[in-house]
Amino acid sequence: MTLLSVFTLLLFFIGQITVTQSGSVTSALGDSVTITCKTNPKVHEGTFHDLHWFQQRDGQIPKPLIQFSSQRVTGIPERFTGCGSHSDFTLTISGVQVEDAAVYYCQSKHYINSQAVFTVKKLVVDPPHHVGDVRPSLTVLPPSREELQQGKATLMCLANKGFPSDWSLSWKVDGSSSSSSISWEESRSPGVLQEDGLYSWSSTLRLPADQWKKVGSVSCEATQGSQTPLSETLRRDQCSQS
Image (cartoon, rainbow, N blue to C red):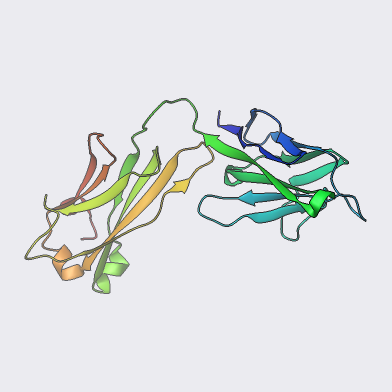
């Protein structure tokens, strides 16, 4: 079961103003997570309660989710809801998704000096049923007959269900990563986080069809840190269209 864990990272004290959030909360995918935010003294109350929620995904700037305690920002999914008043507020994520992994900010504004006070929560994906690295499975797909007729050859390497995200894919042609007689191009897609908390990747090998006809075999190799490399080989004579 994939778990989503919320951890308290930071607590600010500014003068006599404090803002705190709940401790660790755990939820399975599809369940609900509720994050609490408690202020002392109560937030500034004009027409609305001056308490706001933000989400910051890895490598991105903070994005507003909820304004004035309960007003969902345009474009935010309905699974995000906020409520509360005075000093007690909550952010609830109903039907938690993998993409909800982020840092969550609670911002309150108080009448005392109109100070904005931030606290931080982090929602992280905890991959299930394993500790440490998971070796992905590799599949090498040959070029299509239609593409070969156009004078091109594209091979795909699919790496499925690995962990962590920094597995690297590379190619070897006839056992070598470079060749003076055959030239090719490689490209790699970034890792995609799956619902089970594991990652999938792909890499592409491109070369002219006439050079593909000279190839005996191609291998896709996956490496990560000190792990033993993982390799999958495709022989050209296995491909009926070649």
